[in-house]
Image: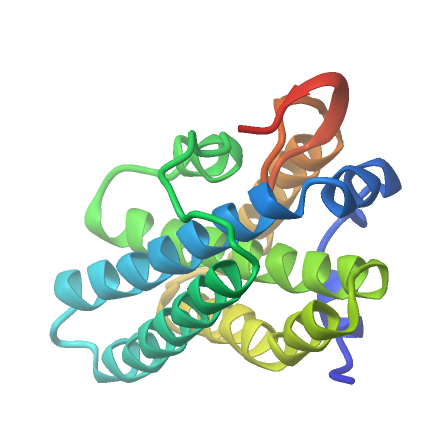
Length: 206
């Protein structure tokens, strides 16, 4: 299995056990939201490509990332079909937007912050796949563990690009977003999703 110790050191907290318990009993929502997240990740990568046509390393990294995310999307859609679950639009978690709203204005600051946020989202996805996998049936467990390597690489690609293009140290900015992310993960959340916070008893799963 892929070693994700670097990601666990990067994030400020682990996924709460209560989220894992809720996910185990709500796999239809987890899979539907997972598929949607893979598609959004591909879209985000392509947006970075379109906004940075002169940065060949960004084009190469994000092109590969987008292709992999779309393959993952197709894999999840296949699993949904096999399990008789209909893929449909569902309300998105506020997780990503709670980070994105703090991205600075201006081309360069926005670019750096977007890369930092991308690294955090990929890191959390990897951490959740690893923590949830042991509680799943063998087929789904194998699939989620197979995603760890690519998700860990995506986290690293985003973070390395942010550090490469920053004109000054960004550790404070990384710490800022990681603190926001920790709050989102550990706060009560009335909407249950792949990236949601601590589920409350009446958490909506639809």
